[in-house]
Image 1 (tube, protein in one colour):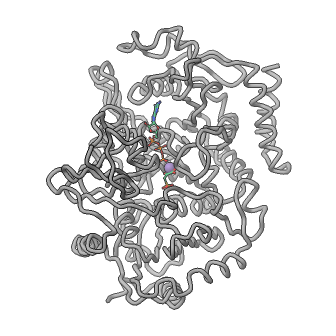
Image 2: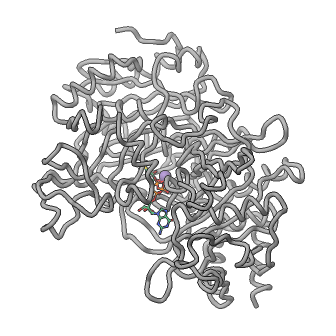
Length: 593
Ligand code: GTP
Ligand code: SPV
Ligand code: MN
């Protein structure tokens, strides 16, 4: 079969790796409809995929992973940079030579009796100045088919790459899915990723977190751009003007939901629209006019299934109605469709749970879908996909928004005093952990810029990089920076803010601030809205002005103890935290005291 490229750096790397893993057969993925169709058939024949109801869910499939392989594994994820300081105190580090020896030992003969798939893919529209190429070598059809949804795959990628050496090498071996030998290793200085003993999402779709965040954040540091764990959405006002916002929330904290939100009734009536450019990752560069522009490097959504329903996120649900691969959800035997907790109030009674066992949704005490079960859906399916989705120049960013799950501390929204204070606000993000990574759920942990598991180099250098990028932006051109918290709870442990579509009410205040149209109150943590300036039309019964005031409350005692937590976190960086941020922390403490 044709090798699809004559690029000597690609051919040499592939030859070397094939010699290591020793497949029976090699298939180069050209991305054609016929080839992908044949692979789907093969995966159905082997049981790797299960074909769903063609009438109700055309071209949709179900896959179940091993029970020990259902989320990212941060404790087995390594940044293999030249020295430990380059990786920094928030990453696991392994010496590159040691890592290669260990991983090549595991990968040796790993494809015996299996087929090797060579996937050329582009992160970003092929040929965009933002975009970068990657090649993933894998022994999993599931990976091929997911990559073909999540990225731009095929020969055009090699054509655009030419003979360049600027591409990311990715080796994936399923091996025995042995969690004790599972490693997700990034070699930022070699543009290389090696992932072994997993078959799950973020561990094996190497274009996503491994490349588009861990490797790309390092590239951005060297090449003066930013790779961020951020959604991109456009808010169109009744005059037809669209303003774009990038927002960073930790995993399973609402990026997909915000990116596709349906405006509240009162906003729809006035003519507001929301457009989705991306739901997880942004690559950001300074444009010719001096503003920051962002692209979504992905081509699909790898979204959390549980909680996705007709009311919470109809656009995400609509995106999953064709050409979608579901992972670890419930199979409804009655009509060969899928179900998950929070889809509707009628769980199937004749069903199969995510572990492959018979399941009756009316009787079983156990959940049918894994809490981190996901759908892989093509972006073009999304009813509110932005007309700028394929724009190689990206979209201009008006505001950056940070946020997380904080039951008590953080107010509904506040604005940073200026760019550098905004970097501080991003750096002090913390959130209650979710099922998106293995480990305890609901524990507060610091997650700067939602990048804790994804920053490919020392977080202190990353903060300095943010400060440096800000310094290149002229006054008035820099996006304004905000923090939001949709997850504040009252004393009855209930969410205080309705969230979802109603989050547009908060985005409205954010955009008004960017336009100089809304007033604010200065507090020790930043600028807060007057409660009257958050539009409650249509939800007055649900949220009173007093409720809103409670959500906007800044408790100095809580914040002082938070400041201690921040100081302890900063102390891990051995004096490397940029002076601007240390000064912002000192100022916060002084104002609170
Ligand atoms: P990753 O794909 O892991 O990066 O997650 P994500 O940030 O895209 O999170 P997603 O939008 O999938 O939301 C995860 C969970 O948060 C779902 O269970 C949602 O129902 C819930 N959620 C999202 N937005 C809101 C909100 O505004 N309020 C509340 N209370 N829950 C929300
Ligand atoms: C996340 O955990 O932030 C995800 C899912 O988007 S994964 O691709 O598994 O990283
Ligand atoms: Mn994510």
